[in-house]
Length: 211
View 1: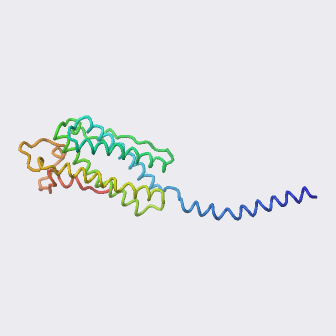
View 2: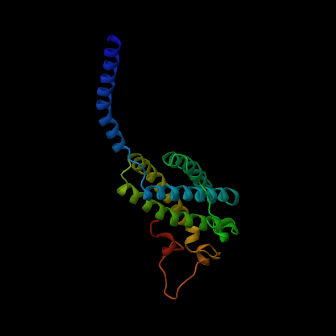
View 3: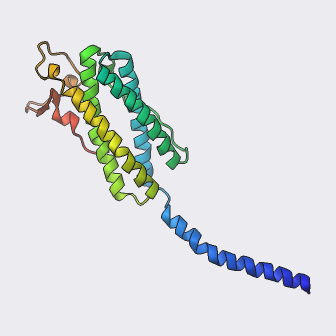
């Protein structure tokens, strides 16, 4: 009888514990919802973008002699590598950064010196405007606290990179070049209608829509 009573007591205690803990588990799950398809798509795209930015920055280290460009390239590599690891954690390591074969324009790879520096800075300005818009959008719509926090912390770094790239692009020696050089922007299709120009870079190539 004592044995039966003891097991009965244990069963009752476990039932009480389960009833007590269950609401807390439910609440915890609600506080950390799973990623929606849109959030997963954002993370995958963000990681692909990081890989492309790192690849372009690595190319800049090989081609540029401009201290500003070299510092910016090193910053991009360092910050995107760290950000990529954080994004991968949210995806539980199921995604990898893969550079699309067209991520780095072939024309950029053929440039050197100031022509490369200007095109590299112009591409960073264009891409960062698009990227920041995407980050701000997911921050406003995501229901995942971890994702919102990560994006909130990443945006200031992206904005900092954008400002440095703009400074490079606004270099006085490129404002009125004595001997214009071909850049990536110059190879883009043009329409008959004059397009606004931002420090030598077509505005349409700098400010683009979010992902």
